[in-house]
Length: 269
Image: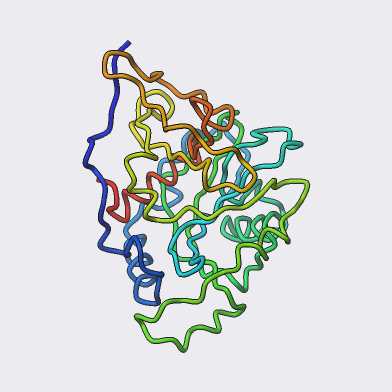
């Protein structure tokens, strides 16, 4: 078996946001501008034989003045991907006029965050087929405002946008679908100790992100295990389960979309 890796210093700085400063009006505009050149969602649809459609939201948020991304751990009673880290999202319904409407509806149903609190910033692409091979999953990017109707629009460009109350969000999640919600700081996405080099669907290098210590009520992780240089990581992660080496990870399709977003915003290159 061969050892696969991503360039060891291919991360650390983004021109679109600060890793350790709260997101601002200026940084949201920069992120939106960075996403405008992203591939259209209609480009490179994986296969015409896949008829199902789904949409997910990658939700930026400030929490205690720390910039990051909200993620959920799926409920243990879920029929598929239970106990795994994911973005809010799900199947596109007949009531959804657009794919982004589906992502916003699912975010409200799962996390209790209404569309009036979410500023859609753009999309990334191309979309991928889910692991079962029966749905194309469309990824959108947004920012979760602490106040409804974006009432913070009067702030100066470089003033920190108000932080969300993570405990309040946790109190309003769908108990049937979501075990918990956590906040992944942007600085963690550039922490070598959290990143594991892997291959998405067997041939596309990307980083998985270890998050076990960020999730409430989970036992602390041991030192994040990496394959030895003489050995090898598996060529293709199964995408089934909470993570590898006994750690909770952002991996699989969720990890791939997170990696694509960070590449688009030049944190990874």
